[in-house]
Length: 75
Image 1 (cartoon, one colour):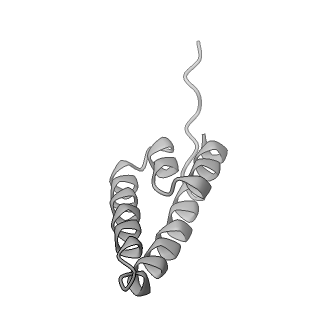
Image 2: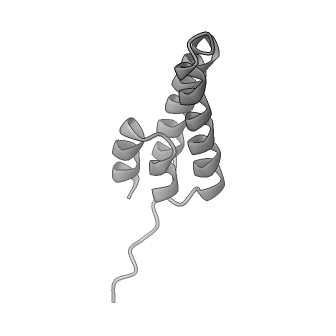
């Protein structure tokens, strides 16, 4: 699941973190990305929106990469 989380976070920051099981971090990352996109769309807010998006993007990839893999529960 960790690899899937990293790949998803490259395109949709926060969603991959949710996939690997870090629910609170994933929600925070998703909300921050949404806010960053809204700021970027306002034009002058891009001064803050683009750096916020980039920081959250890196944070999302790192948090998915450092997630602990859980053994599959096959029987």
